Structure formats: C-alpha cells, structure tokens
Image 1: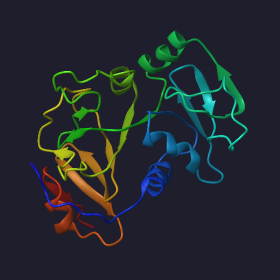
Image 2: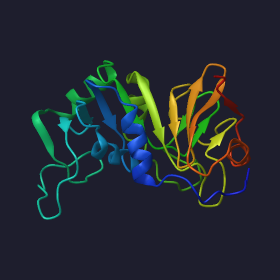
Image 3: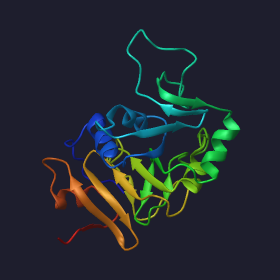
Image 4: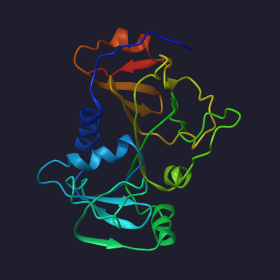
Length: 220
C-alpha cells in the first residue's frame, strides 16, 4: 500500500532521545543494531540505565570520541563503544542466557513492519535472494519483557511500515509495546494503536494518511 509521504518530523537523534526518555531508572536494556544504538547517547541526567549487548557486555556506554576508540570494545553491530564503571564482560552463551531467562527489561529494535496487533517483522523481506539477518532478534522478542521499536514511519518509496498485517516473515507475534517513528509515538494496546505524541507540524489526519493501520486517539 503506497501512501503520501510526509517529510517533516523528528530526526534520528530526536527519535532516539524520545525512546531514552521512556526508559525508567534502574533497568537493563538491550539495543538492536542501527538506529537503536543511538539511544545509549541520551540517558537523562540522574537516571541509571544498564545497557546490554548480546556479544557479551553489561554496562555499555556511549560511543567514544573520535580517535579514542578501542578496537577490542565493540557492540553486536561491530561499532566502537565505551563501558561504564562496574561493567562486566561474559561469554556469548551467557549473554543469551540472560535474554532467554527474561533478565533484560527492555529491548529497542528496528523494524521493517509492525502490525496493528504488535507483530514485528525486522529480519527479512522474504524476497528471493534476500540475505537473512535475524541475529538475536527472535530471542530478544521472546525473552525480553518490553519491546520498543524505533523506525522511520514509511519506507523511502512512501509505503507505511505500520500495517494492518505484516507481509514480511515475522520475528514475533504480538510482541511490540511501543513504536517510535519520525512522526509519532504510538502505544500498542490490546484494543489497537494509540497515538501518544506527534512530532511538531504533524496532525492526526495527516498521520493517518501515511499509516496503513488504523490509529486511535487517547481520550483525556
């Protein structure tokens, strides 16, 4: 379904900041590869968040300054990171034991599609010859208590990423709790998708025009 494209809204860093503001104090958080990694740079002052990366680190800090990278300190996306005071390192298998044992509170992932019931497709388009890249996503959506998705609202071609039903291979069914896009923050509830906040310059009607799934407003 091709829809009108809106070229306004939050940029990638502002989106990451919105996610960070919704992460409470004292929780353990896994960040997916790509845009989710930016969230680590926006921990609010006075709030302690322990970031986990599935290649074996609990206590991931923000990206290092240019020229101060440690080639042996990387995240699951092979990008240079820092570690906070008290961080710990462990085997890859132990990292997934933490995930599968439901010891991680929140995971932030990217998406190809999210359905109106919270189904997530984020590892393959299913096209012939597509390179599978599921990584740890299926373990994360099955084992982490709360799933946040951060993604552009539409594809470069103007197709909605928030759909009635996913057409790509699923990562998990009914797993997403909240969607953060460049246009809006949308809560996934048992009775549908509810718009909590819209970016400056975005109105509800225009947001619905670029969203395949039906959106709802909160009644205050």
